[in-house]
Image 1 (cartoon, one colour):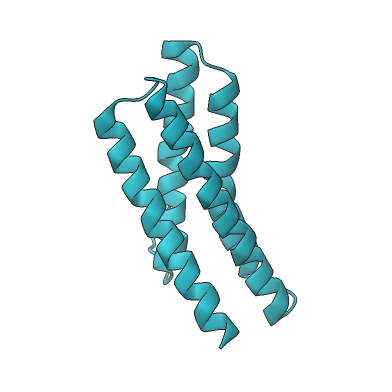
Image 2 (image 1 turned 180 degrees about the vertical axis):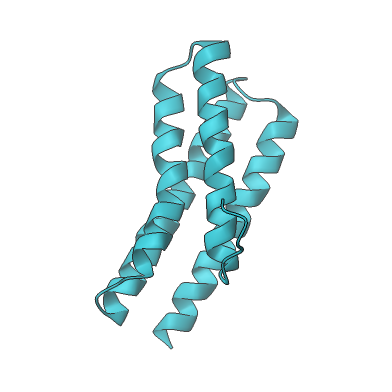
Length: 119
């Protein structure tokens, strides 16, 4: 992230989360030789922030809500992959709890943003 903070906590948190997911994926491949799950979590975990960024230039309010809704779905999927990685002992309990907490925070922020946009 550049030194200039954006005015969007959702944007900032999703970007920071994506960085952690990229590092997790790299570690899964290099240290654990795990290729399938690492790609799945890399795709869904980085899509959250990418969709949030896309929503900034949405063509309409409906498009904005749609982008955030798809981002929410990706966040939910990311939580699934985190649970699976944890339950199959690919990541530690500490790493899981930290990443799951951040993922749940993104989910809550997205739900709130979607509800606010719909009203």
